[in-house]
Length: 445
Ligand code: S3P
Image 1 (cartoon, rainbow, N blue to C red):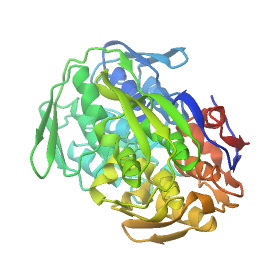
Image 2 (image 1 turned 90 degrees about the vertical axis):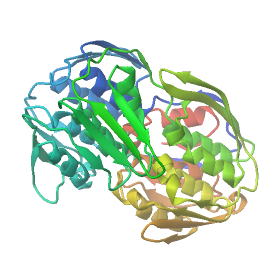
Image 3 (image 1 turned 120 degrees about the vertical axis):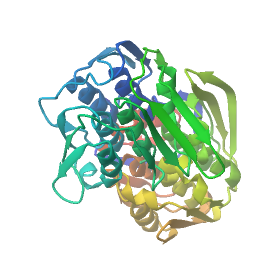
């Protein structure tokens, strides 16, 4: 696939410059494959992310009976089997490192009369799955697990699923999506209630394919409903650049003096824009230009010009869902800013590809930054980029976003930062090192 390096050493560099594209959005790519797999006819996905996580979903959809073909780089054809048309796979479905794959797929098969065993890598087998098993068992699905509701999980989909209404106890687009996808194969209306809005790619894409999606909002919550057994019609999907991947060159350009970059065609869905809002509050010079709608998603070009003296901010709790994957890289910008940055409402970071609160805190403290950790809060005391010492060796704990975040920090450190365990970058951003070096970063593998 892409680059596969065990370690990356990042050196101080003198300004990132140029125009670039980042790879396709991971969340939208997973959904294109799954919803395409449930549609009769050929769905074409253009700009699909070709990373390990997304390939896990593609392989799973094939194992369940859909025809998935890579026509050219980034251009994929999915010939689906229709709602309820998935067939019993003849092997375990291994979702590798991908929480999105396993949770969305478990949701999809939970209302199909079949038995499937899901597993994943060392990290995924440690992540909580009860958040998915509780609502899916209300459909009538049953599960057996080894221990503590963790993978491997054997699921027996419900033969006569009943529609459910479920209020999410933690904000999670993965859980919401699992329920909505399960609801497709249920007679009647399935509803998810969220008190904190999470990314809405599933509902948007289902609507574009012809499903009846109803959204009711009031002051306290949103109710998202899907009617079972819609006729899904294939739609050509144009996958925008992933804002979560773009966050790394964006942050690097904010930290490295003399930088000016333009990232084209990035998805700027308002439920994913918390990182940009936070950087602008810190004083970053970020312009979001040429905003347009593309296949139902808001897309724009993002220009970042280095500006000195970024300052620490308070990131409120209600922004967490809109930037849940961007706290590692925001913490690096905070470390190089003036004053302290307080991030509230971050407890979900403990349940990602690694315990990200621990990984951020340990890596920053090893790099000479003062960090305070609370149950639901992270405080980083910035040292300003001019004084950033670095010189640390970071273990990325097999977590792609921790790896890329500390690599970006190395670009502004007096002494280089070496990050180990960088193979994990393959899960979301296969050409990261080459792309960063093409705009002036100094990364050695
Ligand atoms: C995702 C949702 C988020 C995010 C993950 C992708 C998705 O997880 O962290 O990287 O595609 O739905 P949660 O919904 O569990 O917060």
